[in-house]
Length: 157
Image (cartoon, rainbow, N blue to C red; front, side, top):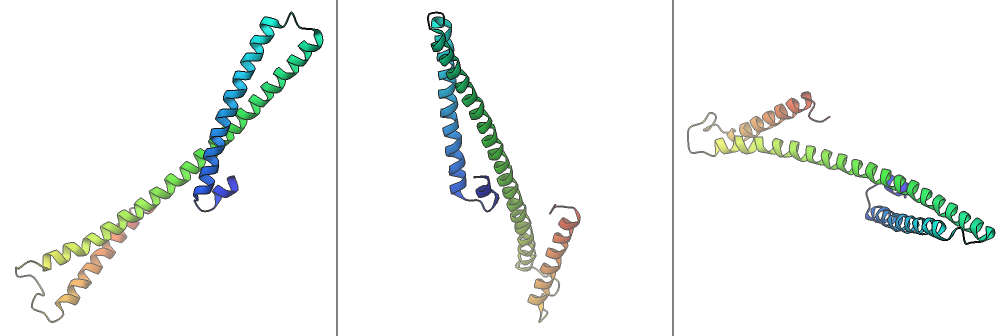
């Protein structure tokens, strides 16, 4: 299951982990209840049982306690895998949100420049033949400046 979680995110591995955790909860609950019941049985009726029956009861109690210990270890391992996978997914979401933030900021700059040149007021280069190309160049230069500022301020780290 861990190997399935190492690669690309997939629902099958997540569902397997969820099913394992659910099964472990059932095992832990069942083993704990069985252990409690047998301990109570031994306290109440242990003196009336024969030596062989007491030995068999002790063996069953030891086996249940070992099973309980194994189920608790498996549950802890599954929890650690789930936590590690959750941290990985959180990191991926964080990186995606960073990318989308940079992308939206970079796309905002041309809108501001084009908005200024869309107004009905006198602006520099307005009557020039290559006004549209100048506007594009100004937008591109400002986008590059914004990206450089983000790069040098360690926004991408």
